[in-house]
Structures are given as C-alpha cells and as structure tokens.
Length: 540
Image 1 (cartoon, rainbow, N blue to C red):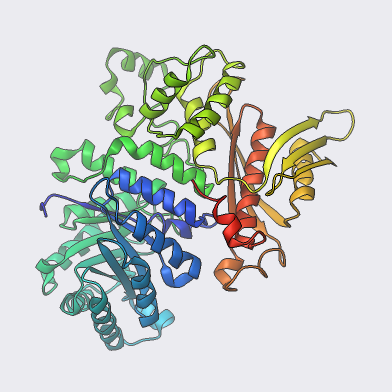
Image 2 (spheres, helix red, strand yellow):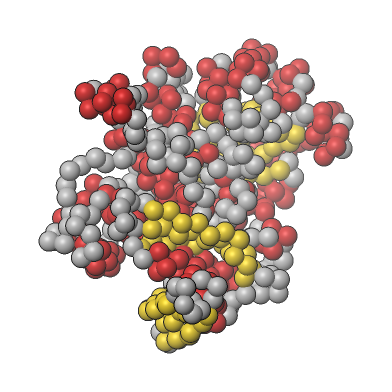
C-alpha cells in the first residue's frame, strides 16, 4: 500500500445511524452502501450485526451485494462486535459473503471506562483482548481492534494492549477519541507515541476515529493522519452519536485541496460527495446546516458585494475549491416546458442520476407539470424531483388526490384520497388546527397506524415563490401499535423512529407525501402486510 494513501473507513451505517432519530431500513442501508462504493470509500462499516436480526440481515445483504460488486473493486465490508464470542460470531455470519470481509471488535481501555463501565482490572482487559481478537482471527483474516476511549487512556497501557492485539492477529488498530475530549496537539501526540512505542506496529495500519463534542473531530483526525495514521473513520455529513463524527467530505477535501501540506491522497471521487450527502440527509431525515463545510447550501454562495465583485473577476479570490469538484453542476443547460424526455435524461445523468425507463416516465410527467408552473427548471428542481422519485421507498399507501380549505373563516378542512396496498380507493375528510394537521388526521383515518409525530421540517430547495419545497418528518410508533408486532422485542426496536421525505411545489402535498412515506416504513416494520407482500413493495 502507498505510504501516503489514506484509507477511508465509512461508518455512516453504524456510528452514523446511532444519531437520535436516524434509524434506517435495510433497503435504505443498501442504497447508501451502493452510493458509498461509488464514492470510492475503502471500508464500509455496515452495522452492528449482534444488535438485532434486522441489522444482521442488512449487513449480510450489503456484504453479498456491495461486497461482490462486479463494476469495480469492491470495498471491504466490516461488521462491529464487542469482545464477546456471540457478537463476533454474528459479525462473521453477516460479513463472510463479501470478497473482503473485516471483523471490528472493541474494548475500553480508559481508567474511567474500565472502572465504572466494564468493572474490569487492566490485566483482565488485556486478557480479554488477546482472547477475543485471537478468536476473531480464526474466522477472518482482516481484524480491526479499537481500544474504546483511547483519547483518555494511559498511553503506556495503550501500547501494551495494542501490542497484544497485534500478536493475536489484529491488522488494523483504530484509536478512537470516543467522547471528543482531546485537542489536535494531544491527539497527534498520542498517535505519534503509538507509532513509536507499540511492539509490532509495522505489521498493522493505524486508524483514527474522532467525535465532534468540542468541534475538533476533523482537526484531530488530520492531526492523527499527519502523525502517521493511514485510515480515517468518518461519516457522511458528520452524523453520529451526540455531536457527531468526523465528516467524510471534510477529510477528503482537506487532503485534496491541500496536497502540498498534507502530502496524502485518498481514493474518493469527490464529484459524488454532494449527491451522497443529499441521499444520507433524505434517508435519515437529518438536514444539513446551511453553513456546513463542503456540502452546506451556503458553502459556495456569495452575498457580500465585495465578495461578488471578486468572484466575477476571479473565482479563486473567494473559493479555494470549485463547486464542480464536489458534484455541484453549474451547467447552463436550461430545461423548460418545451424540453423533451431525452434532454431530461441527459441532464439527470449529468447530475449523477441513472434512472430506468419506467422511473424516467414518472419523473418526466412530474417535470412537465412543474414546467407548466415555472419558466425555467433549475438543477436543484431536477434533483428534488429525482430524489423524491428514485430514493423514496415504494408505497404501500399512495396519495391519489388532495383538497384543502383553510384561512381565517371556518375550520381548516382536508379531503384526502389514497390507494391502499391492494389498489383499493380510500377517501376521508377531516378537520384540523391547520391545513397540514387536517391532512394528517385524514391520512391517519385511512392508514390506521397510531404514531407520534416527533419532527416536521420544511425547506425551500429552490429560489422564488414557485420553488419546490422539501418536507421531512420523523415518526415514532405509539405504545401497543407496533412494538407488539416487532420480533424480537428488543429495547432498540421499541425505541425506533421512522423518517419520511416528500417534495412538491405545493408544500401541503409535499407534507402529505412525507407523512405517508414515514407511515409506509412504520407499516413495513409492523409486519401488518407480511414479509412476502412487503418485500416487493419496499426499496429501490
């Protein structure tokens, strides 16, 4: 391996999914994994197979389908496991079908974790690491070991534990700043000490996994790489526990934009970054803040007059990278109501969307309807249409018609017409405190799936009064509505939430689509329609 090549280890599907409210379906995980492979990540940590049968099955599907891709060199597919034999067995069961499987096991090494969480002596921790890493090695050649809370661990103890892990068969040593406690100087020094003092370190790759509790995750990761680490553990949009993880896009673009400084390289295709960011945002229901580096809506926006003047004269005055490098297309191709299907397909392909003929027909029909309302269709309009069509879970219930009456005179009223799972037509009329409330009450009367609306978020993704609006929702099943149907009855499943996404020029329609999308996921998990029936309806 090139000494300057940094492996990108993406844990969006494992650590990222642990973000509150970011639960993903198996089909969504598969689609994200497919996008990550296209992005060029080296390792996909597909999940924690021992957490639930559903997570094990999702990892198995990713290992089988993405881990054996014939289109290009498939990524390593990794499963997380505690240093427990049953966890390691579950991880191996899930990942063994991949061309390049990896088991990632971990055990805490900080005094506070050993004393209060593990209630183990340091000697017991060392013995457990030797035993379980050794056991994992009997199943899989590629083993990663993480000393949890390494950032607060005694360095001398770390050297000992890591040396024993290498002896037992670990090929990658991941050094996590689990609680985002360290500073760049401290973390870089920790990695340098490990590189210098760990017995057998020349036989392993050192990895870094940083959290953003103090806003230092990216800085700490870069400091670790500068000190000799050659794998970075990251997530798209920086999602993850608490304040999140190191952002994939920030590490990839820092290395790409400052090659003379870092003298490192990755295998990331940066032109896929924006599309991947949007996919993860839509699936998890977690919006990207406008001022987020690289992928935020304002990352390449300039409003100040001085900045605009400089940009018009020379873009490099205020942009250190071009929008095109991260997949933002600035083409002048204008699409409107007179454009044909071929032009639409070409433009979608240029934006990174490869749609089948049946999907194209549906998008084209909605495109024509939108073109009748807008003079010019922008790239953002097309992306919203494509995301809503291509990445939406196929519906058990589908919106067929909607009529809303609201204002200061009379109560808001909604009439909703929907097609059911077997094509039956349902129509309900409902009153509400507002138009969206009335629509949601009518939908609830049809679907009959008790839930709690945890989050309702609206974004205008294009400019002007005729803009497309995006709505994301997050639902939680009410006690007794789904928990009794889910098997097994794990605490993780009982706490699960479900996201929905919809886009339309009419924000009420977008709201309805988002809510129905969330309900369809909730219904799928409930098993109300049976696995065989649902399997043909869910996914892309």
